[in-house]
Length: 568
Ligand code: C2E
Ligand code: CA
Ligand code: CA
Image 1 (tube, rainbow, N blue to C red):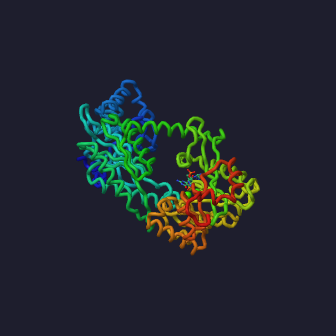
Image 2 (cartoon, rainbow, N blue to C red; image 1 turned 45 degrees about the horizontal axis):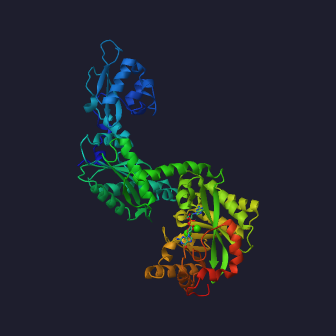
């Protein structure tokens, strides 16, 4: 079993413990020969601040001599240590320069004690520097540098059949926490997550923090690949329990991608890529799960890269279009339409929003696309009869963009679309905390006369406090509760309660994803105000809306076909 590296933090010597009298001139370099950190004496003697990124040749011009540069290269390539005797600087004095590799760092130590011995045992500063360069300050876990160095060491010699396993972990929904509750809360969450991972590992492996909310685990001593999956499943389950940050309960899951050497790669980089691909598959399959690399996953990744590149230019190339799905006020009046974004990719065909919106958000493209969407939908809606409303979705990234309310009111002015006919749909994620900004944004939209709907209700945090504090006009109950409404007593209870809750708070209720007339009848009977779903109509392209609107009067018969129904 490997030693749990995080435990090393307990053994880090404090600087004041170094009592030798020799303070070594020590510097730590990455393998591109850029300075990472250095001892005080190094900084004093060279008259340089320990500027990160300084090159070895700037600090030690003499080492650029071909013969000495070759020695340094050899140290890096072979990992063996080398000693160079420096030119005599003072009579009777002999300076040595020791160079060696430790945890993936090149260490240069100049030693004027007249000996080629490292001062390692006589001063603790080196240990402190190495620890600092290889650990993450926030969580105390070993960092990416240490991870790469240890992974390289642990890769199996030819002939070994199993292990180590490399796992890449990524927290689900970390970004909204950071964006809405602030970096302080984000930091606490990362510390708690690090503790939770360590706890689940229980000396079965070592965990590293690679960056942001990305962690990695190296698991050694596997007898079969299944053991890695068992460990990853245990981790995923641990993350199903909430975290408490500043008194708020947060559900932040974890997705895990697993790669196993030598089967999935026998070089660090290859194994990382495989684990990353598996992680992407885990995310794509709905997150909060673990997936083991399989070569067929590569095709998906290539598509993702292709998509990502073409998404950047999709707006200029006019590849987006909008479909409109009717919202029906019970018993049978069309109240308006929800605009749903579509992307017509030149070679891959029509791509649904769930596939590209997260990508557009991650790449910072969503506010531009959202702006186009709002303007285009308002122009289209101007051609409809004047009493139909237009519902437009706002993703969390758009909602949090500064200047959102100004942009929306300007768009309405430019297009000449009345604010009273616009409904904006937002999801619960953006309202994690009742920040003044969120409240201001919603109140401003309210004052403008725009209606606000809470979309996908019941699927995320479902905190009741924001129902009390935010001025919603409508709650949209997610399809998840509607799909089994006729069979599942629990769904029935939930939907009934949400309807009661909303009405008690003077809000309207829309049921999403209503697919059958029987569901519609049940919902109408329970007092639901509006319906949306394939039972009434799927989303329609703009040029088919006219027909739909003209047939509006006959809607109920189209919707309910010959099934038993109420007055739909
Ligand atoms: P949403 O806002 O919950 O939209 C409803 C989704 O349910 C749509 O999927 C719609 O086609 C689908 N749907 C409607 N009725 C039924 C039904 O009876 N059965 C089933 N199975 N599905 C039904 P779509 O168009 O793929 O959109 C997915 C999500 O993408 C939307 O969920 C919304 O969150 C997001 N989205 C779509 N357009 C935009 C946009 O312009 N901006 C933003 N920010 N998000 C958008
Ligand atoms: Ca919606
Ligand atoms: Ca929805």
